[in-house]
Length: 97
Image 1 (cartoon, rainbow, N blue to C red):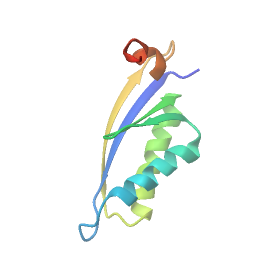
Image 2: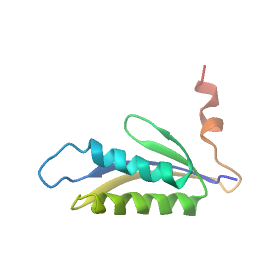
Image 3: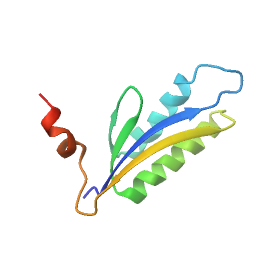
Image 4: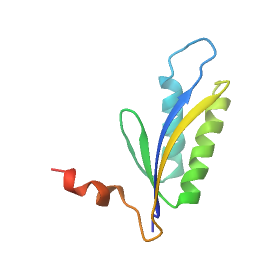
């Protein structure tokens, strides 16, 4: 059972001011390869699952940015933790058509 939602906006620095979109695409690939439930939004991506697993994905995303050529990266992370269960669908169901 999922006990956390983690939203992340990853902001990689590029060496020569290049477009960051390929870096962001790589970060999203890390999430996709992890297999965790997630939703990509315009300014952040939200993941749902076990808190420890999600934090590990965040770590891997940051490492992937360095491996991809970024000298450093800023990650803005929001965490919703509920040991009794956490669900994107449950928190947003009243806003869905």
